[in-house]
Image (cartoon, rainbow, N blue to C red):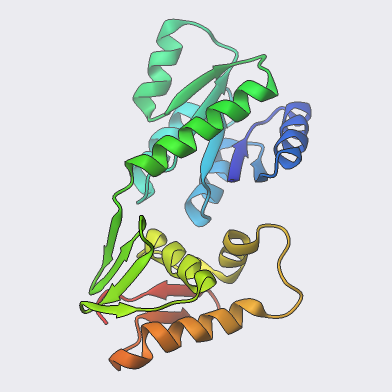
Length: 224
């Protein structure tokens, strides 16, 4: 998973970084609520680990603003040293999906992250529709205007990422991270896969659905 950790305690953040990396996950970190919210809105994460007691805007407010502004649903695991029932209820009311008290074992945090990610995936609709484009997450079948579109497995992952982010633009770095995490190929493989995807998705239909937003990244055009 690609995880956003919003935690102002430097030692805890470092321990989380080491633990997540050891178990094959990648993570970005923010030490305050403002930066955490900015990263969450600008990038694609599978899950957010959010401390309640942050400087500036606290975790409750970060979660509220995230739910109000982020088009897709991203699971949020809230961390806190407060064990009062009202604090937990406030966390859930703000939009948190789960709640973990400090101090905690890394194994428990990882287990909760896996459960949240699995639950989020199960609750997604199998069929994703963008204009005339249809993507079946269960079968990985792709159609446009009712016609089957055959795409390479990497091209499918690119298309799915763009569709899930729609109407937002995904940057080149976001797509690279989504496909290859922290081990991208040496060559410009993304350019090649985008070209192949356009050959399948756009060329037979005469109108481009996969657009390049110069200087920013890539997006799908639902009106194509």
